[in-house]
Image (tube, rainbow over all chains, first blue to last red; front, side):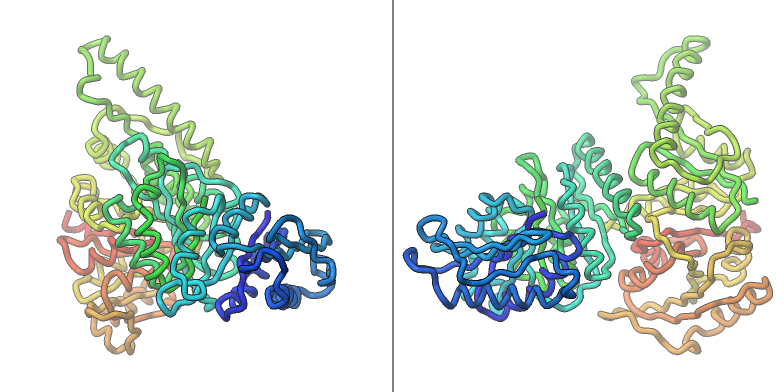
Amino acid sequence: MKILVALDGKFYSRGIVKEVARLSESTLADVVFLGVQDSETEVSQSQQMVLHECQQDLYSYFRPDELPYADFSLEKWQKIASGDWKVSATGMKEFTLRIRSGSVAKAVVDVAGEMECDLVVLGCDLKHGCDWDGDMNVPLRIAEDAPCSVLVIKQSGNTREIVSILDQSEVHQEAIEMVNQLVTLHSADLTIVGVQEKNEDKKDQMEQRMVELLKYYNDRAVSAWAKVINSAMVTDYVTESSQNAIIALWMGGKQSLLKRLFSHSMVDKLLNTSKSSVFILR
Amino acid sequence: MLKTLLYINEDLASSIALRFTDYLSRFVNLSLFIAHVEEPDENEQVGTGWVRRTWEDGVASSGKRLVDRMLRTENINCSLAGRPKVFVGEMEKEMILELRNGFYQLFIKGYLDSANPEPFYDLISSSLCVETSCPMLVVKNLSLSKKCALLCADSVDPRVLVEQSMKVVGESSFEIDIVYFKFQESSQVQILDRREGGNNLGETESLLAAAGKTVVNTTVLTGAPEQVSDYLKEYALVVSTMPKRKSIHIHVLAHSLASVLLVRDTAQK
């Protein structure tokens, strides 16, 4: 598993490091910390500093004998392309610091694709709903365009419920496991909500997905509650649940009902109105 | 042993019901029978005499394969007291007949919990529920708890609740709690003083003591039904008397994520 963490020097970025540390510990993940800057020619000292400090924060959550990552010095930054620098250290798992120039959302989406990440994690400022350094579009564009799952962490307080909403689309093992890890990390209850369509075939497929998920979680001693809602209720249900619970939305392919229901504006609304983290699963 | 009939189909609700029944069997000594009804479309139904019997045999065989698939997939540990029973016809009608003729002491059926309470009201008012005299366990979720709650309220007859529920959980190893519910429109569930439970609560406790059961916790709750239902998540099952009409009580049961055991006054049946 590979986790890409988008970071800047703001408090909302620093606040997510602990959760990333717990997630990387439980999944034994390769981790990439990504900072984005304007200049294409020279790597920013302040960006290097931010990433290095966050990396040190993350390392400090591990006991020295349990740290799966090797230490590295800042002198080893390498320019890998125009406006693209990185430094890596390989222990049992790989830890990479990377700085890219350009727009934040595009850089995150591009790096996630290029490095074949399984998960993108970022924080956001709650002041105006969910923004990144004053730009409301950054979390939304990443959530929408990333080729993998995206976790937007809105608060580091302990959430006691994770509401996982799915349709008939196929669910991937990595995403199932990520939800499992979130449940464990937060000692949270898991509610699996199936969105029903009138089409009987799709209804059966959705139920089959729920059976698979329930079995998976029950086998791991995770208590999972099952619930179904009809498609007309989904947006209200999600909005209401997001006040107290982390919402995990399974966005499938072209046939995905949720993808159709959660248009650009609905994901935007969810990110802005949710009081808890939002997890877009792919 | 409690002679129990579990209805299954090939769906999520039945998958959960099978596993919950398996879990339940660790606490309650069950003599478990499984039934399935193949409901053919009206257009499919053919002929009379041997033609019809041959057709019915074919449909029943397909039902048997379905039950075998379910049992194989769910791989439950609880042993069955007999071969699975497969009927051809209307589900409710066939189950009512089987329950009546088989003298079962408990009927279990899966129910997919929904944010919309209407399907639960439909189930409660269905002929299957109305005409079945034995307790009915509506399995909503696989709640791996060792606790069972008796749901008490002003509208609940303590004698029916205790006498009938003890027929199912009386010999079980479940920890028994009493949850007394008082409706109040509020944004949060509040736990009230025990004295707020009134006479019904005292009578329920006395009847349980007389039945030799120790109540571990008694909680008097007030709040909206949805919030109280959320509180009930910590229980494997919630025992209630069968609500007679749409009420706040039924609303609590409809929203409960935990499975619901419905008991009724058999003397009135």
